[in-house]
Length: 143
Image 1 (cartoon, one colour):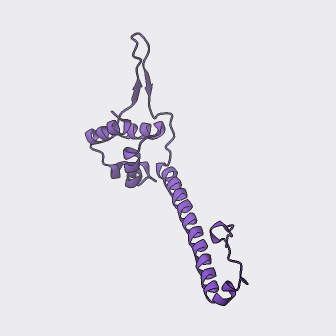
Image 2 (cartoon, helix red, strand yellow):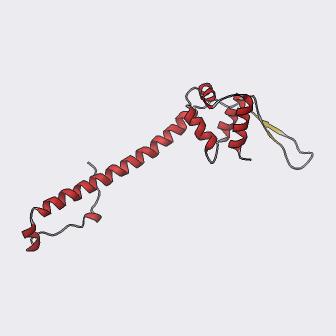
Image 3 (tube, helix red, strand yellow):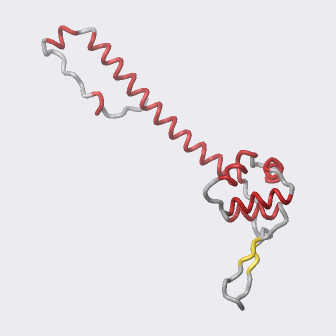
C-alpha cells in the first residue's frame, strides 16, 4: 500500500477532511493537501505533520526479530509551511511555460511582420534585390 493511500485511510478514520487539515497547517490550501495525497511521492516531513495531526506516529520495525523498534514523531519537527513550497514550485513551472510561449509568440509576430513586409515588395524579391531571411533560425531577442 502506498504512503498516500495509508495517509488517506488515516485521515478518514480520524474524521479529518483535507480542508480541516489545510486549516490546521495554516498556510496550506485544500488543493495543496490534495496534491500531497494524490502525488507520486510525499516528503517524510509532510507525512509526519499529517500523522501528528491525526494522532499517529511512525514506527520503524526490523524484519529481523530481536532488533529495536524506532518511533518517529513530530515532536522535534518544526511546522513547515506546506503551501509555500508546493505553490512556489507550481508558480515557477507556470512562469517558465508562460515565458516560453511569450517568446514563441514574439518570434511568430516577427515572422508575420517580415512576411508582410516582403509581400509588399514582390518585384524586388523576383529581381533578387531582397535576400530572404532564415526566420526559423534567427537568434532570440528579449524585448
